[in-house]
Length: 77
Image 1 (cartoon, one colour):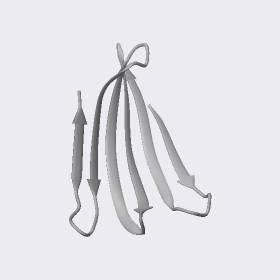
Image 2: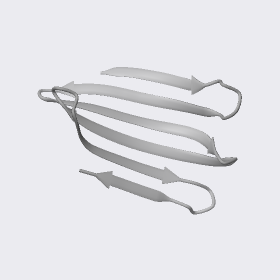
Image 3: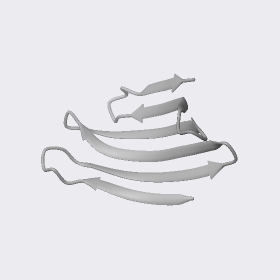
Image 4: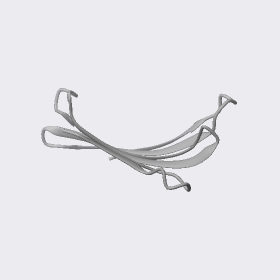
């Protein structure tokens, strides 16, 4: 497993991401959490991306939460 922490420092927006990459047999799994300001609203996004052994995307799941109740879930398989 590889773990990365990344921070956006371009000055216009703020975000920080915690990311894991694991490889199991014929699948690569990318999981992460992003904390950001989205249109000046504190937002949490949690994602999981599964790819086959050739790095072709097989599924994507994203969950977004805000303090204003504008939560959203995306599940593409």
